Length: 78
Image 1 (tube, one colour):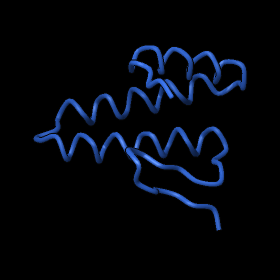
Image 2 (spheres, rainbow, N blue to C red):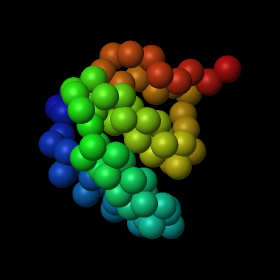
Image 3 (cartoon, rainbow, N blue to C red):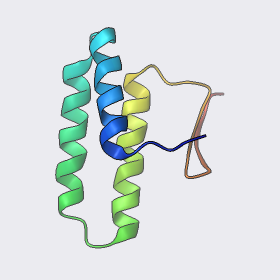
């Protein structure tokens, strides 16, 4: 599976959310986590903030059965 660059991923997410009618919510999430990452002190903090952002987007899109980030299970439906 090919991993997309961040800009391409964002573009596709925005297009998808536009179709679902939740584009503004996604843009607010992206803005929130971009802002949080600007104040990061180290790489671990940056990755943890990114995980929170990914989970918030995952929740916006209706969740799924499970979410893995970098191979780590972050969420699993009961």
